[in-house]
Image (cartoon, rainbow, N blue to C red; front, side, top):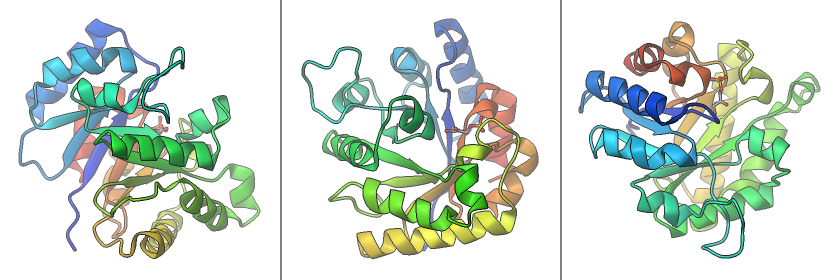
Length: 247
Ligand SMILES: O=C(CO)COP(=O)(O)O
């Protein structure tokens, strides 16, 4: 089964409009349709519309970083999946470890958000990953398996959802698991997801956590790694384009 590589940028809570537009336009200028990978940027909610306007339906897609589990209503400050879709979004990240930690999101919350995304016609990118203490205790695969079992949306198909493995201790630290550990985790994830979805040969599994131009080629060459979810290095056009070129 061939899977098209997806290089996704999570801009997190960074950039004002002028910077976001400049970054999107630098990416659009140098990223070609038909390149070896698909490219997605997930700006803060305030920048989805201006970034979508710059990208103008071209080769690079735009998405959100989070959505509410409800369709609409009295949820001050929250953003509904349909609102992201309405601005031209195709994907939404759910269950990022920063949301799980800063906002106390449980697997059940993440699952409900992913289901809201599906209902709105978005592809949820469901994030999972162990802490350093969990890895040191030899529990990394068990933790990630439990997160997948608890967070994958009901009714998902293998092409309608993406899973991102982001070890918490690798985010923004410059540290990554060994290449063998990434390979083993992704193989395990595909097996677990396959048991839930019926099959997972077409499911995209992204790796995230300190992906840089210097390590992208080695990580992306792994059989069960179908792309990357990039934080810091997605804020520099040159670095993000280099990661996409490594795919
Ligand atoms: O959290 C991440 C992407 O969602 C990874 O962040 P870094 O690439 O900055 O480590």
